[in-house]
Amino acid sequence: MTSITDLHQQLENLRPGLYRFAQLQLRNECAAEDAVQETLLAVLEKPDSFAGNSSLRTYVTGILKFKIIDHLRSLKREKPLETRDDESEDDLIDSLFNANGHALSTPSSWGAPEATLQQKDFFRVLELCLENLPAKTARVFMMREWLELETEEICKELDLSTSNLWVVLYRARLRLRECLDLNWFGLKT
Image (cartoon, rainbow, N blue to C red; front, side, top):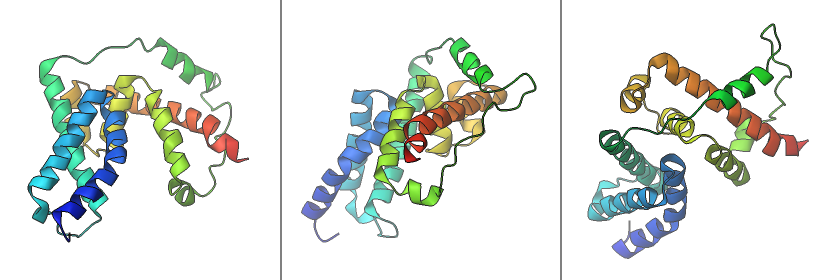
């Protein structure tokens, strides 16, 4: 970094993306803003900690992940997670398979995944799909796939059994697949 002013401007440019990331995970505007503020403050308090081995965005996002995890842990101590009736999810799963357990339709071709992942529009659609998941399902998916937490840690934090965790992840992936098929890959044909 050439100067603290330059660092401050770069962090300000990263703020909207960091906020969206935190909002998707925490689903609470105030908590997301707090996590982003704590992250930016941590970077500004020790600007020399950034060694430049990665991009500033990667470095700051890594710090934000830990702030989000800390927030989720504090929620565990403060109040239990909300529960949700999963009947509608069971109906969704049943509607995708025939009596023999085979899928009624094969997934649409997703083309070249590497190229798709590089498109900003894809991430906007993915964010919308994640926002439409039930809160607990989205939280479990984000903890596993984006925060890359281990199964045991997620189960401990959310008081879930391992089998229940895998069921929630399976349901999240099904719903995300359906949403992406309708709102992204279906539009590409």
